[in-house]
Image (cartoon, rainbow, N blue to C red; front, side):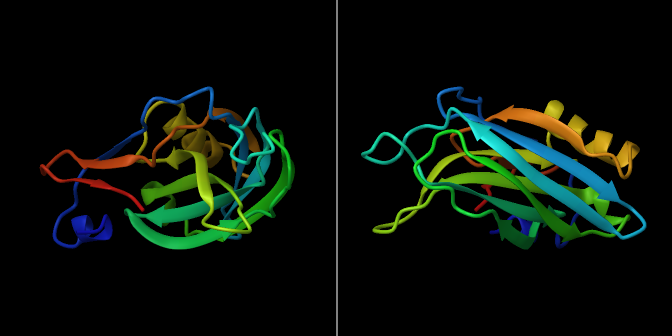
Length: 178
């Protein structure tokens, strides 16, 4: 069963719980800006700080992958450039997502900070989630963006070790996102 399957025959209430953030994984600074007339959301990956070293050099080669989810369904993925040999990358890269005004009330973003490896597979350093199905600042940031269109809203997040869990409150299904 996928997260999208949860929505086929029901309209569940969803709460995404983020595992406890781990300051040893680092911090990600993200800016969100809603452009309602253009039906677009601009996500700016500002920087990351104090990332966990993943390479034998004591550094990492990080990039950020952003996944747009609507009603729990993976709609679009975009990523930043890879910045080599750093634990404190400064990206200042904007990623634009087309998003109807109606879909904003059912949207979440998953951010994965990943260490690029030339040999072998890339490794997840940490992740965060922002959107309507999260709680706390992860939800507040999304709604601040909606309430203040055309104004970039910036927030710092401690990275989490695992991807958020989707919990349907009107069913007993729990599914980990991929």
